[in-house]
Amino acid sequence: MSTIELEQLPNNVEMESLPCPLGCPAGNEFVLKGRDRLHDLPGEFNVIRCKTCGLMRTDPRPTPESIGFYYPESYRPWARPSKNNSLPKEKPIPAWKRTIKNLLFGKPLIATPPLPSGKLLEIGCGSGSFLHSMALKGWQVQGIEYSAQAGEAVRELRYPIHVGPLESAPGPENPVDLIVGWQVLEHLHDPLPSLKKMAQWVKPNGYLVLSTPDAASFDFKLFKHRWYALQLPTHLYHFTPKTADRMLKAAGWKVEKIFHERNIGNLIASLGYFLQDYLGKTNGLANYLEKFPSRETRLKIFLIPVARILASLGQTGRMIIWAKRMGD
Ligand SMILES: [Zn+2]
Image (tube, rainbow, N blue to C red; front, top):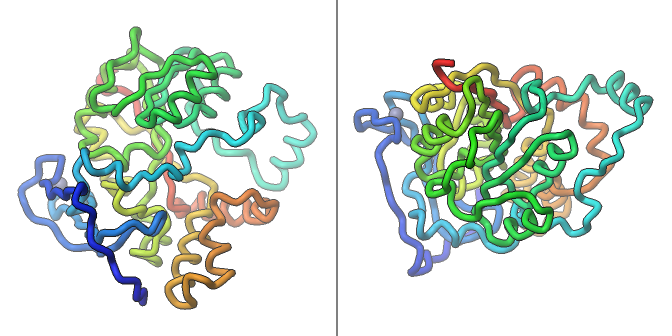
């Protein structure tokens, strides 16, 4: 077990405890106790499960005013790309390379529905690399981003961007065909109103595509408080396919498809956390594994077949959800 002493919370960090956002009657069960393993910031947080709907949430959790403390400047999704060449290139992958790759590893998962290029809004667009890749495919793109630093990078790419929290963001001027949010939903203090609002932002037959960790996966069950995708306390909700479906339905969305990312970075980093607890924070192997998801290594190629098998079994720890506006 970890023997790290938890420091006191700084005075400016306030905690709150709220009922289930789906309006269920009171009644929760304790799931686990954890801490911030990504940046080693102080505090202990419980994950509890609503006895009525099964939705898991972090409780107590930092208030919306205090949560910034847990997003230090080094928070990776907000970092500017170090080189311009980290943005997707206009040059497509040669067909022969793609064919070989597909033969070896299977065709890549298509993260967004097969729509003709139209208008796209990305929530939590970071420094804009996904927006850029979609713009190159002919989409008219715009973003909403909480971090001013990341938002500035999008501005430099000359894409329309609203910097600020999603909760208070104005909608797009005209309805869009597609809204995407990669690893955003679990960070929202009150996701239901935002999901409802977004249902008004799409055209009839418009899509919402989200990705979020899957807390029904076997790596969560195996690693529990050491699960890499738990990311306490910035992850305020811990969805499963069932609870994500329930919340989306309550917000006016109909889930069309849920599938899993072909990525086992989660599993490997969780193993790193486990080894750190047993072999010590200075153990080389433990630290290598913990940092694996952010590492550029060719080793990842060899893990693709494993990731593919786990993804097809719905067990990679990260799911992608396609939802359509209800009533269309
Ligand atoms: Zn509930």
